[in-house]
Length: 302
Image (tube, rainbow, N blue to C red):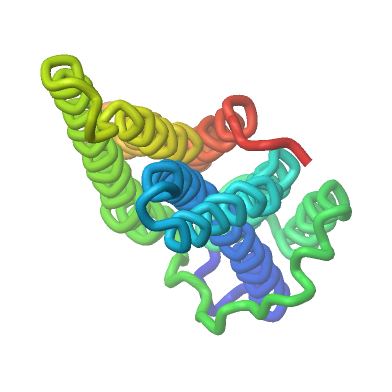
């Protein structure tokens, strides 16, 4: 098996640079979607709060009531415009960009590790053929890469399966999958706590209005609390925090057990099979949550 210094670095370096370009394009697409989803949730909350406040102030402070009514109207008008940035088509484009990026990354790591299908003397030609096939299949997405620049970064320090296990598998577990699972879990918990708090507030307002009467207009604010709760839970649903936590943690566990089994000499001793299995787990993890993002996306369609 050849080491890092033995392969044509110009070929794999060019592929690695192109992978960075698709990765940056995918991240830019994701940022637009997340911003749109957050914006939609914020606009929904503003519309509900401002609309209710405008109605309550119409009699006692007409000028303030009119100003708040305008704010509510603008928020409701902007909501469908913002939602288009998080449409199913936008989500589909992002997930496909991410899929190409991850596929190219897998090819580079397998090439550097020197395992099949890159174990022969024609490894550069094989890499270029697979690279061309991936980009041909995603040709309709090439426009997304025009306005982004690839990150300047060296090739991964991988030259064999041992360094592949350390740099690809262990770092993927320790630096990405587990932190991502924890972040998703914390985000899901925060939104869950907020939704529970708002539900309690709505119940208290409703109970107070039932006991004391609705002279203070509390019933209207029950609807606002419900609208805010819906906006929060809707945002959480589109971000799929709970599902991401499960899938990231599961992939991390699978990869950890794969390495432990190999290191203990109880299986996965064949280098080609070990690397193929690690990449299969990573690919299934990525494809699983990305497919569910499209399938379960509840945002407005374009």
